[in-house]
Image (cartoon, rainbow over all chains, first blue to last red; front, side):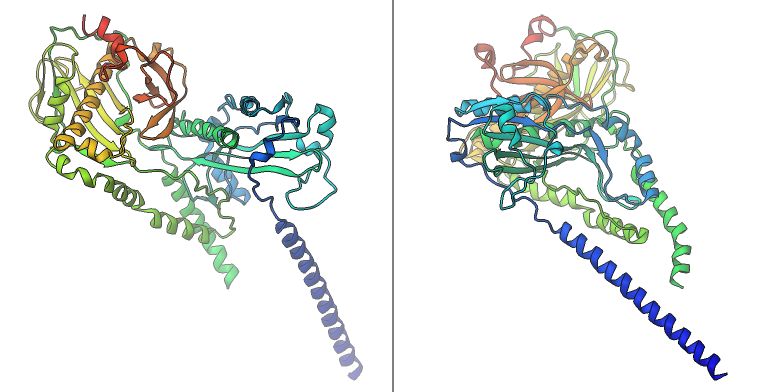
Length: 252
Length: 320
C-alpha cells in the first residue's frame, strides 16, 4: 500500500518536475524568440540625410543615375490579416483591384533622365544607367556605421565608371485601403512610396537619403466602379507629386 | 467559459462584419454632378435665338473658403488584430470620431471670408446672373427667370453657381452646375454638367483690399466674369460634336489655384493664353490657368480676359 502510494507520489513528482522543465524550456524558447524579434524589429532604420551643396560641388566626380525596377501597380489591404479577412477584403474591393492593375507607370521610368538633366545643369558629369538596378542582387556591405548603405554598391564604380550613384527606388505604387480584420478603417487612397538616395562608391556612405511617402484620396466620392475617376485622378496626382518630391532637392 | 463565449460571439461578429461591409462598400451615387446629354447632332445657337437663365432657389450667392487637404496623413499599416470585436469597436469609434469633421474643416476655412461679409451679405443671384449675362455674347437676347417661374418656349439654362476663395485670397473658383433645356422640352435637359472655372491668380500684397475696392465691386465683377465664362463654355460644349467623338486623350494638367499648384488628369479641349479648357475623368469641364506659361501666350487676344478660351468660337459659331 505504502509502496503503491510512494510510487504514485514519485510518479506525480516526476511528472511535475518534467512539466516544470518543459515549461521552463518553452519559457526560454519564448524569451529567445521574443528577443530575436525585438532585436531585428529594433534595427535602426536609415535616417534621412539631406543633400548638401558641397555634395555636388565637385565637378570631377562622375555621377550615375539609376532606378530600381518599378513595382507592379497594385492595391494593398494592410490589416486584413487572417485568411478569411483577406478573402473578404479582396472580394469587397475586387473591382478597384482590377482597375488599379490597369493603371500605367506613365513617364515614371523617365524620372532618372529628368534628374540627370538637373544634375547636368549643376555642372555634374552624369551617366544615366539605362537598365534597372536590382539592388537585391548586390552583396551585403561588410562595414557598419552611421549612414552606411547595407548593400555594397562598390561594384558599380568599375562597371559604369562612376564615383557616386543616385538611386531612385520606388517600392509601392497604386492604391491602399487599411483594414482591421474584416473592416476598412479608411477610404482607399492612391499611394507612392519610395526612397531617393546618393551613395559614394568610395566608402559606401549615403550622401543623400530621402524616404518619400505620399497618399491622396479621391476628390468627392471614390466608389465609382468600374473606372473610379476620382481615385484614378488621385493616382496620377500622386505620380506627379512623387516625381516632384524626388527632383526637388536637385532643383534648388 | 471564455472560449465558449467567444465561440458563440464569432458568428454574430461575422454577421455584423458582413452587414457593415455591404453598407461601407455600397456604390456611391454619382449624384447631380454626372454629365449627361450624349448628343449626335451639334446644337448651335444663332443670334436670332433667345435664351433664359433660371435662377437658383437660394437668394444669396454662396461663397466658401478653400479647404486645404493634408496629403501626408497615410494610414499605411492598417490595424493588425485577430479580435473581430476589437476591430469592430475600433472602426466604429473611428467613424464616430471623424463624423462632422468635414463641417468643422469647412467652418474653419470659411474664416477667410470674414473681410468680405459686407460685400457678400447683399450679393444676390439676381445680381450675379444679370452681371454675367451682360458679359455673355452667345445667341440673341437673354434674361433671367425666377426659380419657380413656368417654363418658357425658348432655351433655358438652369444654373447653381457657388464660389470658393483660396486661402491665400489670390483666386476665386466657380463651381457651376448647369443644365440646358431645349425649347419645348422642359423635363429632360439636353445637356447637364459641372463646369469649374479657376480665376487667374492675383499677385496683390493686399488681396482683401483689391477685392473690396468700390464696396466689393471687384469681387462681384470677377465672380460675374467666371459665371459668364462657364455659360459660354457650356454653350460651346453643346455646339461641338458628340463627346463620343472627343479625341482628347487624358494627360495630367498642372494648373494654378491661387498661389499653389494643382493637378488634374483630363483631356485638353482648348489651350491658349496660358489657360486651358479641359475635360476631367468624370466628364466635368474646367477652365484653368496653366502652371507653366506658354510661349504663344502673347498678343492682343490674350489681353481680353473674358475672351480667353473663347476666341475660337467667337469667330465661327456663336458670333457669326
